[in-house]
Length: 441
Image 1 (cartoon, rainbow, N blue to C red):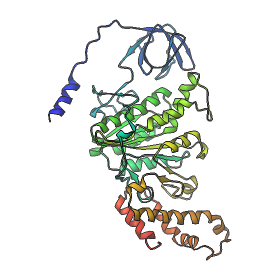
Image 2: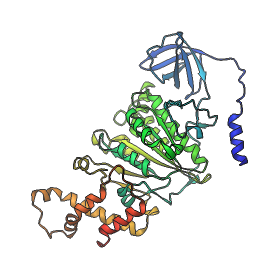
Image 3: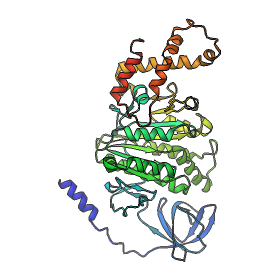
């Protein structure tokens, strides 16, 4: 009780008065979204206010330095920008607002409400880059995480504190799948960052009602916003998750998508003159993904956790895309969605053979792991001989495993399907898996 009272009093306390002279600089150049400001020294990550001289205020973020000038990037449109206008720093560089006030609200990348509600008042702050801890301060994943999706619960069981990627091309069902996970998962706090305005609006309408709203925070930065604002939105969502994890809570963090974040980091890197490496991605763009993902996980100190679900857009359905490959190498598992399965009408279109959870052996029983391996073998045997079956070239009896896969294919296909509104618990999914192939051992 006393600790809660101290927290409230701390948030109500007035910040110290800054009596130093107010510094300002002036816009010297603007080229392709990159602004050069003279006469102002501000740390990287700091926000600045630009007065256009006609009553409007623009906001920019410091992204680097060059030849004695500060390099900035607009957090909005630069059509009203003029040379020589004053630029003034504001806020605390490198710090983002966090706190319980964000629960039940939808905000933009700067933490400003977009849901029509009152302004957020939270004095708690968190470093934008997170609080770095030692490798041994990260607890192991030992408890299963119930997603409410039968195929995932039974075949690629998630763990609390795991980082998982959902990888697919465009239009295969990534957003629908994460919406199902957000609806069916059990967590103290659910955080989401979305890339499409329509999807964010739909999510708020479906999930920000009743009891679910009290444990949900939405950070919405659509794809048409400035690159640094999209990146800042991802940092804000992750910082909020870290703040609640520090309170000992179990957080589900959903980010859509890592590819758009890499695109934003690539745009910033190219503006600063960084050379492109893998398919035009500068090294800093791919390292941004690693830094962001590594902030999720379990905490030994607080006992809280961040279970991270990250969508990854495979450009042209290329599973060897640099972003996909980087994400797959750092994540604790990945769910691959297949366009071929989606075209056959199987939703969610999870490719069982290509998907895996690196912690399933630690969070699921040996019996469930055995059943999952058997089902994977049956699916693989059927899919590898599907063309022969369609042509009528397969001779029954040639391979007992293929024969078993053919016999069980209708039941397996039905097992992998699930309606959007349906929720299947972890225990029920394992029970249905046992009923499906329990005798095939």
